[in-house]
Image 1 (tube, rainbow, N blue to C red):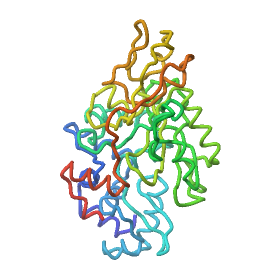
Image 2 (spheres, rainbow, N blue to C red; image 1 turned 90 degrees about the vertical axis):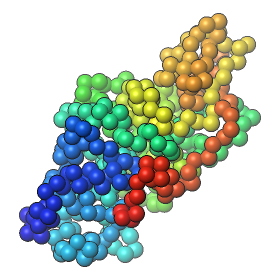
Image 3 (cartoon, rainbow, N blue to C red; image 1 turned 90 degrees about the horizontal axis):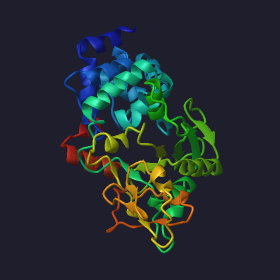
Image 4 (cartoon, one colour; image 1 turned 30 degrees about the vertical axis):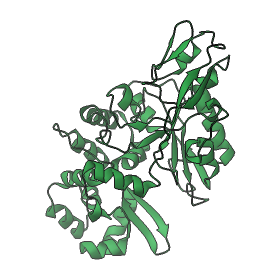
Length: 368
């Protein structure tokens, strides 16, 4: 190891604690636990020198030359380590007009999702211990929620106006490149012996800015726009729930989620956390003249929001407005109607992070 990096580590004997504190300063959060499960998790992902360097990085990104100047190191020392960390999904790296840049990532959505190839029984167990002790990721108790439910279009009543940020199809169509990857939540649960019956390669990623965003990705399989739409519709038919970042502009992913595996939806089913996700602006309703009380919708609903009496009955407190029930109804007796006053998400990721930082009373300005 170069002497400069050895000195980096010696300067701080608590590399993992420092990184954990920095990650919790990011608006998304990485709350500490009394048992130290958050540190055990980081130790499985980072070597000490990687943790130390990550703890000194910025969210905005820097070239290796800029970072070396700020840290008093040589670029030749930093660049190989930065490239290794980027390849391991610990940090973000990209080409810019000023050169290759490297940036700190939040733990979720970020570092954790990039550990797909590293997910084994040990990492799965460490994550589960942290998740259970922390009842999620430490970001579920303040506004704004991180996820927003995207309703199935064909379940929405035809006389209602649908905004672009409320339709998964429009998010896909407005992107410039697309890819699909295996769901890390399903892989993590499978490693624990809790294999899911839903399709597992359903996580859609997309870029609103580049036509070749995923060409060199080892985790993502490049697909076409039409293939992305097919995967989306297959997920609907399977009964998965569309979720995306809770913003209006620049969507980078659509998760097709289940309550048995998804780290976000489990926050509802297991912990009843108040700000896990935003319900859609719609809610299911039943056409009493058409419903035959067949019960298919009960099996489709992952949130136990439907019961059967003489007809299907909707629990409005549990319905998240996903529309998964409606597309399976043989009598077309279920549809989505407006829940009430429409809510507009934060405009973009910067707006979301600003609101989240204020709600969590953290100041990430030193990381910018």
